Amino acid sequence: MRAVRGLLLFKLGAWIGFMAAAALAKHAVPSRGDEESDELGLVAIFDGIQLKSRARAFRGGSMLAWFGGIEADLREAELAPGARLSANTLFGGIALRTPPGWRIESTATSLAGGVDVRGPAQDDPEAPVLTLEGRAMFGGIAVKASAAGAPAES
Image 1: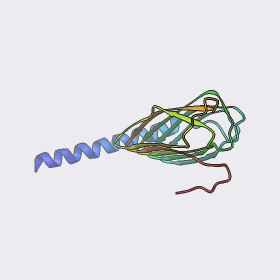
Image 2: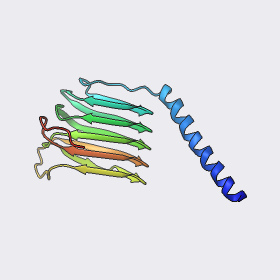
Image 3: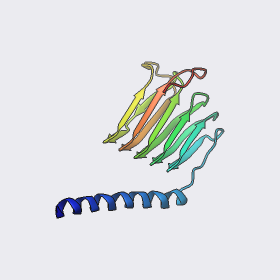
């Protein structure tokens, strides 16, 4: 019984530590960027962010979802050469919607979570490329290509 109680206290302490660290980070790391920004720095901690980008030369940036979620619609953005996006989740999720003409090259990995990058097969060497990197730990990263006028799917 003593071992079970010790394990439960350890788990409770770990969760309290995660929550306290997230609460501190929420105040220390603000989001930057809006729908016209060419580079984003989105941070969703205990929160949710929805962004519809209309950038004329989207270069990428970073996204962090920690006990929160980010939904970014990039279908109206124009991709700049060499665009890189870093997406990281910890007990959170990131959903990206891209136009079907983009090629997504992903090196994102997951640990007890998932990374799902779906898009049309791109054999066109002239297609704009978005390089996606990052990690999903106990959370998920999803990228889906669809036309700009298409309704959002669940």
